[in-house]
Every structure is written in C-alpha cells, then in structure tokens.
Image (cartoon, rainbow, N blue to C red; front, side, top):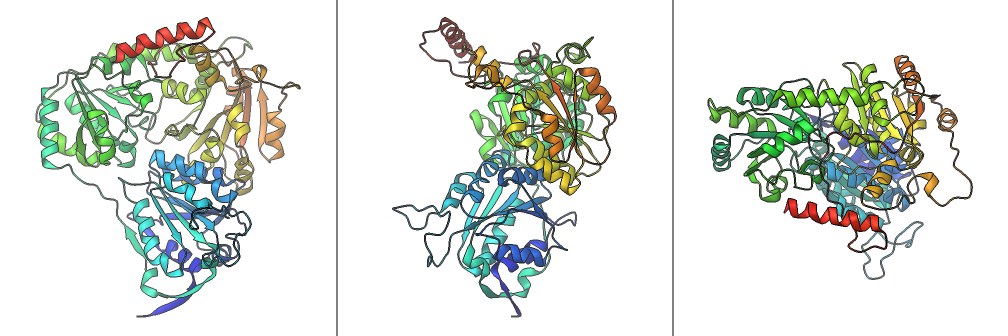
Length: 604
C-alpha cells in the first residue's frame, strides 16, 4: 500500500480538498478560521500550505463566521458547505450557538474546534475546562447535544474514519446538520503514514429515496378520501429541488399550497395555487384554507409551532400526512408518515392519484389578502415615523428578479413572512428555526458568497445589529457586496409587543423602559462607516426608496431608518401558545390569563 507522511492536520485539509458533490463542485468551498493556541500551529500551518487551493477566511467572531457558513449552505440548497476552525475554550464555545442553529435548521457545516492535549502532559492548559469527575471532558463536549456527528480526534489515524463519517452527515438529506471534529492540538501536529488512496477525489451523491409501498398506499387512500386538502410547503421542498414538482402537483390536483418560513418562495406569490404564508405569522388566506381543510399534507416541514398555531390551526383536520425524508419529522403529532424525498414523494403520489381533484380554494381569499398587504406596505404621506410594514413595501418596490431578502429574528421575520412577495425559489432567506439574533449581517455575507450575482438585501433591527455586527467589517475587507436596512425602533420591539400582549407592563425591552442613567444615542451610521461601509440615515420612506434605488455598487451599503416599535400587521396571524402567569398582582395579566385559558380550551 502506497502511503504519504503528513501531519494529521495536513491530512485533514488534503482530504477536504478532494470531496465533491454530484454537480462536480467541491463540497467544502472554504474554511473560516480564527486562530488561537489550540489550532494555529497545527491546522493553521496546514491551511497556509493549501491557501491557493482551499481559501481560508478570517472572521471577527466565531459565532458569526459560523452563521456566514450556515447561510452559505442554506442558499446553496445544502449542496455546498463550509468548514470552520477555532481555538479551544471560548473560541470553541462561541461556536456552540451556531451549531445549535445549524442543527435546528438541518443545515450542513463542518466545525473543527481545537481541543486539549491528547497526551495530557501539560494539563491543565490555558482555557481548559476540567471536570472533577471525568477526565475525558473538555469544553467541546458542549457541542454534543447540538451536533449530528461528534468525534474527538486524539490519534492521527482517527481521521481515516472520522472524516468520511462527517461528510456522510453533511450530505445525508435525512440526518444533515453540523459535524463537529474536536481536534486535540498535539494530535494536529503528529505525523502518520496515510494511505494515498484516502486522498483520491470522491463524489458524494445525495440520496433521493422513494416512499415505501405501504405508506404510499395509505397516503393515496387518505388523499382520495379528502374533499378539501391543503399542502403545507416547508424547507425540504427547496432542498430536494422540488419547487417545480410541487407547483405541477398542486395545479394538476387542484390543491392549494401554503408556505412555512423555510418553505416560502417555493411557489411564486402570484400563482393561483399559492395561498400565502401559514400559521402565527401567516395570512388570512392561508389560515382560512387550513381551518377548512379535512386533510393537511405537509411536504418537507417539521411542523414547528409557528406553522401550526401551536397545533390549534389544524385541530379540525381529519387527517395529517407528513411527507418528509426524516422519519422523526414524519411522525410528529400523530401524522400519517410518508418517508421520502419531497420530489420523489410527490411524483409517486401523482402517479397513483389518477383524475383526483381537490375542492381547491376561493381565489377571493388570495385577492383580499394581497389587497390588505398593499394597503399596509404603501408609502405614507409626508415624513411620518415609518412602520416596519412600510419599510418592507419600499424594499419590495425596489426589488428585482435577482433580489434575495433575508432576516432572522425580531419583528421583521413575522412581517416579511406575511407581506413579502417572492417571485422565485431562493429569493427569500429566513433563519427562523432558531430565530437567532445576530445571524443577519453574517448571513447576508454568506448568501452573497454562495450566489455572487444575487442582489442581497438584509433586514436587521437596532437590537440585533448591536448584538452581532462584526462581520460587517469582514464583508468590507473581503469585498462582499450587499445592502443592509437597519430599522431603529430603539429596543426589542417584537418582544415588547409580546410582553404587552400577555398582559405584562413594558419592561426591559425598549431602551426607554430599561435601567439606564444615560439615554441611548447610538449613531449607527458612524458605526457602520467606521468598519468601512457606506452608510446613510434617511428620515422617511421616500428617502429609503431613493437610497435603495442607488444600491448595487461596490461595498456594503447600510441604510438606517427610524421606525415605530408598536404597530404590526393587524390582518392575518394566528394564536401562539405563550404561557401567561396563573396569578398576578396586575389586572392586565389576570385578564390575559383568562384569554389564554379560553384559547387552550378551544385548541383542545
């Protein structure tokens, strides 16, 4: 057997370079790195040697550089991904939140945090976490609950099995998620005689399983027995490349389609079968269709509580079928399981449904909903304080066929889900599985890196901007161009409204209702400019539209606009189970509790 002598870190990098997807592209297109004493000597040297073949990107924060990698994978429909490496200790644990985000959203990312010494000779090393009762524990054990595959590389030959397992995880549509290889720092530098065959180029093919005959037959029978079926389209439709298949299926069998946050843009907003967003942040049209449905067919959705209205929305449906590639998701809430790739599953259903036709849905529902959308998103007269809905309207009017809008947390995800009109798949990028504040700016960079020709517009609030803005400097340094719209409502407006809606007093959410001695006076324009961005503050929607019209040049453009923290779209929406205290000294809370108990009875 022919061998080559390499350090474990060098062998890892060489292996990563030679893993390809079925389209011929490399699966790992680049590696984000923040070096420290746990990875700079071993992995750092290996990456330097490969820098002309496998680019290394320098982040400013471990969590946010991971967010950029995750957004890259999501926008690439999970066909391409990125790797990340950090030092031990805080460098590693900073990345745990991002691992959780990737885990919840079923997105591939290869995380390689440095680890303690395998030989334990210098223990305890700087930043080492010591467990008084378990000598095998390190800070990296915090990744175990939020990784799909976890391994600790404490021998150089471990990568011979660990790396193929990691890539199997990254490319498995059912178990896709973060693969974490905790790499002991002394092991990184150890040499070993590796088989040359280990580094031969390999193509990883994504499985597209068809449904099992028994499950398919039961699903066919259930659909044929239904009069008013509805399809709930989730993110799995996008990852399976099944948007066209879903469109054809819906039209052929006259079944209306509603979309989750992850599924939005599966159908063009103006398609006759597209009845809009569903659930807590859904439209009147979609939720009305779901209320009247006798069968709900979920396609590639995990039926999160925002989708189901905490399961109150589908309480009247006689049958729930879940077409999902992951059995865990396909059985939720007693659903009739149909385990398959979304595209293969729809094709198999179509083959056996014959001339079946559902009752469809009233087009007036769609018309009335989008009339309501146009009203709340139209530009106001004068220089009145803008609402988030009006900001969305301005961006919508400035958008084109190449525009991708993205967001993650706060007010905007709900309003965008309700109000944004998507024309093509991939035009709407929302991280709402984990709803992680701080994803936005880094995520926008990742989207643009994945699709450089797209017009990427990032919505972010003042609160989430303050939580994680450092990758703005990274984007400027790397020449990644996109637009950021910062809506400054002076606090956490979304949670403030939720607090009020559950009877609570305004407290610790808006800046004016928080403990401080010096009033907040953050200058977002100067801050963005200090990191190299082009930044401007506009006084009203008219100014926002003017600045949006001039976007598209080189560099990151930041547009700041003050918004009103209180209004939200009155139309649409659905109940969400947020527990209200049973007892309180405040009458508003007691009234809210009564409303909550009544809603629970109606659901149950």
